[in-house]
Image (cartoon, rainbow, N blue to C red; front, side, top):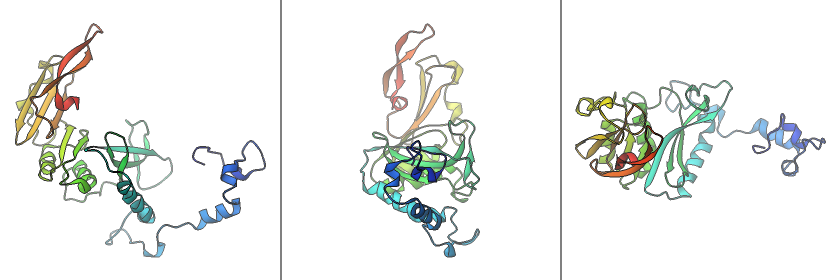
Length: 267
């Protein structure tokens, strides 16, 4: 049904050859399908904790299925050392308390899901549905920090390397991950708390291919100017901030040329 959407469910069993789908119709009769859809439950409605009670979950009705999927994702695939964490939007235009509106995303309205995946294959290892601003409680200053620690918990002490963007990153979290033998490489916002902005060169002083670095306490921060006026800033516990490589960039004349780049930004 997902690959062959129709205006109505009953049309898959229709006598009209324009709609009839033998692959669906041969599985079961339409009456049986509709009856199962009507009474299908994944959890006990009589045991749902009310809001404010211990054990309250907004995804209570789907919790058994989600837990089963999460455990299967981890059992059926052993990822490489490099892992990626990001957010993903699932389109939905109905009315639900978990629905999010993000005007800058390609899918602007729907459910937000945090995902950790194998960076080499893209295989999903641990999705987590965003349940609202209460997620993480008051024990974390940043939502991104809570998400990273939650998704990366099964890989602690294994020496995996995490990649994520500036929504999740801050200097304190990089230190905490390193204590758990988790290496990380991420873009970082210069407005984050404890970010040494005054110790790095200003964006306007750097030309294309130029960079500035800071190293301290096993953490390196690299600022590099590629294209445009703004620089890219990356913090890493994986690479030596002094290590350089070369990448191709288009100059003002439209010609591709090789320019030096910090290894952490290339990665």
